[in-house]
Image 1 (cartoon, protein in one colour):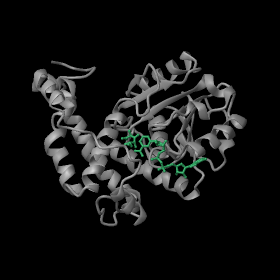
Image 2: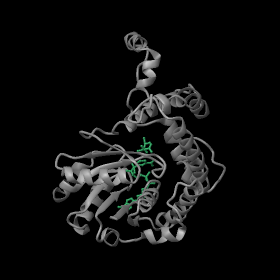
Image 3: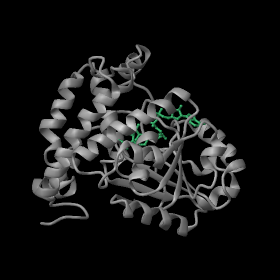
Image 4: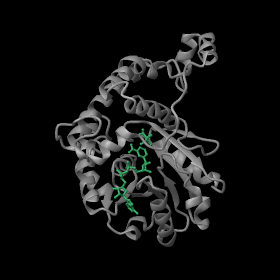
Length: 320
Ligand SMILES: NC(=O)C1=CN([C@@H]2O[C@H](COP(=O)(O)OP(=O)(O)OC[C@H]3O[C@@H](n4cnc5c(N)ncnc54)[C@H](O)[C@@H]3O)[C@@H](O)[C@H]2O)C=CC1
Ligand SMILES: O=C(O)[C@@H](O)C(=O)[C@H](O)[C@@H](O)CO
């Protein structure tokens, strides 16, 4: 059992605290927003109840176990006291991360591994020199208690032993770690999501389609094949000469990277920041985020169960 400190209790932090607790570790959680830290308890409990109902939590795990396994701390120093692993899941802002890393350097145990959950940032230049050997990225997907992939990558000075420690820990929790040979922003899956995101935002900004139509195209067009074929086995079924033709014809030009989107900006300006605020691209009918997470998780659990039975023809577990 490791002592794990999770910094940031937002969308990812509360869920990562739950993941490590379910993995048998002792977890301390902090956030610089008191309300967020308080809300984390209810969100973890709802997620645990959903997992337990589906038989996906360890035998006999209850809210009482959770309260013992995850403690919440307002002070950073209390949170990281005695930590073997520090999971950084604060806001995706380089200045905020740089400031936190300097504070961490002053209070974290000397040998503690610091693992950032950053989606895209090269966090290594933000970290004080003394922590470079024990700093790495371990990037999870939401909700991390259901999505298995964890991207792991070290920086130029990271000790390979630190990478192996985290890889083994993640694998022991039943997850799918992929250790990247070098850092690239977005790893594999987030780069693909970025490409999709860029295209989706352009379609919206250009008024080509509505959010509902875009999601329908993904759900009815692309999504069904992905768990069975990935992208490259699907290409084998398409036929590779067709892919050559598509490249050669140059009919597709990716949208320019503009660093902003009018439709996204309008939503955020209107306070529609997503499920946590009750609305985003969709209107979530004023439902409590915990209820929405529960509904999402229940459906994802059912899908995951079905997919395990069906198997896959692509990827590391291909059974074709
Ligand atoms: N939202 C997602 O689906 C995913 C996010 N990530 C990454 O995880 C990290 C966190 O993202 P979210 O959970 O979405 O953000 P979030 O905004 O939901 O939560 C971030 C939390 O960090 C807290 N915070 C900010 N500065 C802090 C500090 N100095 N000390 C303690 N707490 C502090 C904020 O109060 C907030 O509650 C980011 O690096 C993001 O790129 C990675 C995978 C998925
Ligand atoms: O999709 C996810 O859960 C994550 O991979 C992320 O890191 C991000 O939030 C991503 O979706 C943003 O592009």
